Image 1 (cartoon, rainbow, N blue to C red):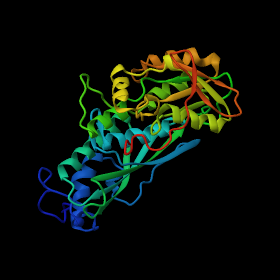
Image 2 (cartoon, one colour; image 1 turned 90 degrees about the vertical axis):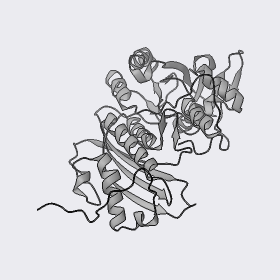
Image 3 (cartoon, rainbow, N blue to C red; image 1 turned 120 degrees about the vertical axis):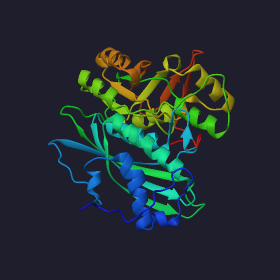
Length: 348
């Protein structure tokens, strides 16, 4: 006996739009889930159609994180809200030195949203999850009235496992430690902002959105005792380092000349009145390690495709004020303080 579906006509993914019935819990919602989400995210756990996912876990430490994505515009050079939702949550897991295993996905969709755009986002999300080796195993869909959702918002929760002997944390930076970054900063924020404002440049600026767990796995295999890892997303590099300085009760001194910034990103920031150190990244990480491990760690990072532009950018210092200072290219010093206000809203 075949499993008959309660609907007879396929969704019009080319011309159709979301209406309130797609969030009602009835036939229309079941069809949306089947023909958009289950089709894209297909895996044995999801296909059980339960309101939760049950899976075996290995002994040891687990990591869980959750994040919500409200980026505007939804599509930008180098990515979209779907791939960003996967990469951002995978990276939060990875910053604990963990291997990501499973994701959940919650969608809040505005009435009138084009089904073709939803399908494009979901397919991008599925591709990013497959590339990262993680399964989207359960989720939720809600529809809100026109004008109350700005297209689509996505919430993802991730679960991962941490290998023995690995325990990076924001409170473990120590005086003398080296500060490293995995590549150029500011790419994502400038890509999103330039698209939002309709700006064009001679050289295309792409988001750096990427899943970093492969790079992290190589790093912790070579240097299991990495003190801190963090992805500098909202607030950028400077704000992230201030967070770490306050958690660890230390200061830092950075070399402006050592911080990698693409020429086109620097030029765009100058045009827009932005500082690249405060612009969001979605495919970069900061690592802090003992000084004797810095060269090994840098070489490992540079040997990975997502770390070819890695650099040592500063050192951790004793400082009761917990200041992050920047040695400028002019030979002076300035405080690289926390981001004040919202420089680039709706960036992730």
